[in-house]
Amino acid sequence: MTPFLPLVLGIPLVSALLLALVPGWRLAARLNVGASALTLAAALPLFAAEPAAGVFLLLDAFNVTLIGLTAFVGLTTSVFSAGYIGHEVESGTLNPLRLRFYHAMYQAFLFTMLLALSANNLGVLWVAVEGATLTTVLMVSLYRTAASIEAAWKYFILCGVGIALALFGTILIYLAAQPVMGPGMAAMTWTLLLEHAARIDPNILNLAFVFLLIGYGTKIGLAPLHAWLPDAHAEGPTPISAVLSGLLLNVALCAVLRFKMLLAANGAAMAPGPLMIAMGLMSLLLAGLMLYRRRDIKRFFAYSSIEHMGIVTVAFGIGGPLASFAGLLHMAMHSLTKSAIFYAVGHAVQVTGTQRIDGIRGLTVSHPALGWGLLAGVVAIAGLPPFGVFMSEFLLITSTFARQPLLALALSGGILLAFGALVLRVQQICFGEPSVGEAAGAGRPIHGTLVPLYAHLALVLLAGLWLPGPLVGWFQTVAALLG
Image (cartoon, rainbow, N blue to C red; front, side, top):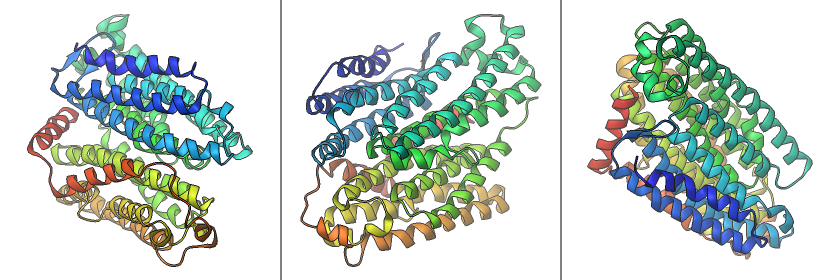
């Protein structure tokens, strides 16, 4: 096992412990950025490392892709967070005492996500995902308002029920593997389970996957298990919305895909694709309809995340080289684009003083750099060319038309439904005369930097115009691994 993987896990863990002891939020914010940069620096060499598996940790092309993405978005969000939190403290919205553990929890959150992505043990995977829930619950309730505490409890209860169902599914996998592999760690090790999957009782595997899909599907935000997600996004700090939407949903989907591979390796087990397609399509259509009724800008983009995770779930449910390639590309593009949108939304909320969409108007007039950046992000997430989201959706729809035309029509209809809501709202937010609150803040400088926003948008634009050959080859390798 390469020494860089322990570093990727150790840096955020040690940083979380150290940041818990740092009293000043300014120093903590700088240390948070530094720790995130070190994590990214340790993650990059993993792309050149050989695949390896230990008792507890695993390194393959799939999780290396998500580890690199998580480390990168973790760094850019920490940069955005430093300015965002500074404004919240200076405006009196946040008491500095409440920030005592904010940055420590941020690093702990990164650690739990990275641990879940690199876990080769089903128990470690479950504990890591549960740890990610607990750390984010504390950050969602940071404002200590009645609404934020309610959102945190809702998040904790619903995801707690989901993770309990995932635990039951994990226990069923262990029970099914015991007669074949014997008791002990071997029956909990994913790589060994994959080798012996053909000999495991398919009936128990089928039942286990249903519980696992529902359990981890709660964390993905799939309908009808999505109710926690809009509240958590709306009431928590915007940097947490960025990492929740851009990273945590991917981690839970990664867990589902690992178990999907187990079923695919057992010829007598059910095909997991139809279940995933059904839940993904339901999420896409529900989110597309709900977007028209949202009046809070953070809730609006939270439902957009549900929509896109539905698209990704459909892609992996269809399977095959092209659909899996499209699903993987869409995961990456959604993470970069949606986190960029939340960076812009965070700045917009601070300069206008409201999260109400009808209170945010004419951003391109009052704050041109911010307004045009938000507009570019919405155009990208809507699936318009020349951005990378268009490329992934185009690949998915064309490949689906060739295999299942009716499903392709439903998929296209859901995407167009959401597209209409995005176009409707972005005109109001970005163009026209600034609203009263926005006009009052027209001369107010943006607190922090727009570099993370435009860095993400540049990458998404580049992916839409040109994908380098090595990157295409890497994604093809991952698609073949996923099946």
